[in-house]
Length: 144
Image 1 (cartoon, rainbow, N blue to C red):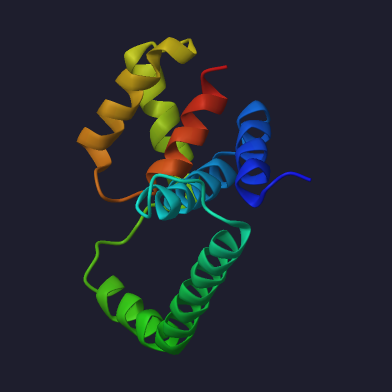
Image 2: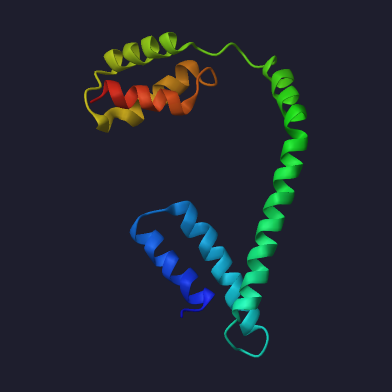
């Protein structure tokens, strides 16, 4: 039977093959810390018991973080609502689509290669008035 370390290493490799970035990150962190337990104690391989204790510690830390976040959700929502009042009015989706269409026309943009030019001009004309992720998606759609 494979040790926990071997199983974690195998799962990291499988996650890499499937491009599971979050899994890779979590498991790589766990693996690195698990390996260091044994190395720091006589340059040996960590035992399954030690690795299990480490996993339990990770879970406990995550649960503590979740508890803190849940406790602070109402406060964070209030902060966002309060702070949002000081931002300029954001473009609606329709206004954003129209602005992007106009910029594409003005620049003569016609292919995805022109995306950078369009985004740069959008920022120059309407910086801070739109969600960048939404704008990027709209530009991609219009340049296809």
